[in-house]
Image 1: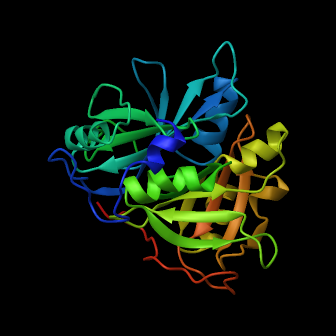
Image 2: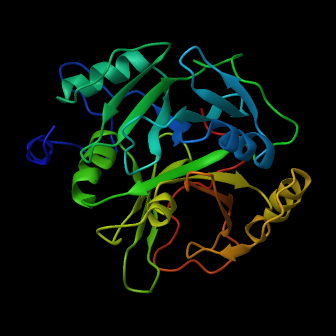
Amino acid sequence: MKFAEWCGVVLLGALPIAVGGQTRPAITGIAFVRVYSADAVASDAFYGRTLGYEKVVGADGIARYGVNAAQWLEVEKLPATPPAARLAEVAFTTRDAKRMRRYLVAHHVEAGNIESGEFTVHDPEGNLIGFVERDAMKGKLKLSDHAASRRVIHAGFWVHDRAAEDAFYRELLGFHLYWQGGQKDGQTDYVSMQVPDGTDWLEYMLNRSPSPNAHQLGGMDHFSLGVAHMSDAVAALARNGCATAGCSKTQMGRDGKVQLNLFDPDLTRAEFMEFAASGETCCSAILGKQPGEEEDR
């Protein structure tokens, strides 16, 4: 759907919208984030050993690392013609995949077929977005005692046109502003849009170089692992053999939350973040419910 088409639809903000008898089912959080990998062995060392997750490889060849019983990280072989971005897909949990697909199609969004309880669409900027029915992976993931975090709380990617993305995520899907701020006061570089029926969010990364290098792009296209206390994550990473300076380098984010950043072998950023703010929050208040150990489902 073109941006002009989005603007031509009359929408009602965060409320479920009925079109052709279709209303939006609940979207409760992030189901998984999938990244591309040029080296499966190196990626497994990062996701399996450093982050401490257990791997299951599906018939499709995609490695799935269980974060908890309902969230996971996926690693897929880099295509022969590699895209610039290594973030392949962000998928959200819904309580009814069939109804979600009908709802999106009623709003003129092209949607793939439902397979194993999930389907995909593209957002206005072409990002692949999935919707996974709750419990679609129940019993199919392996969980590890060595996990440095047991919650995915947000994912983010480079956004060029905030208005176009808002038309999709806010107006059509009901996401709402959780927090926004910038590297400096008075500017907006980060926009956190929280799911309508949970505490996870999607982060727009704005105002970046028009030609980012691989490290800069990987820093924008990222996923975030939540922890109650960053000291616990640092200790878990150390037990898992993470010995570089980044494994213990924490910082206070502009949203007042303690962070720690690692990069996988393909330069996708894995951000550890405390659930609650403990420092000064710049730029805007945190407007939504804070995430915790258990995802709202």
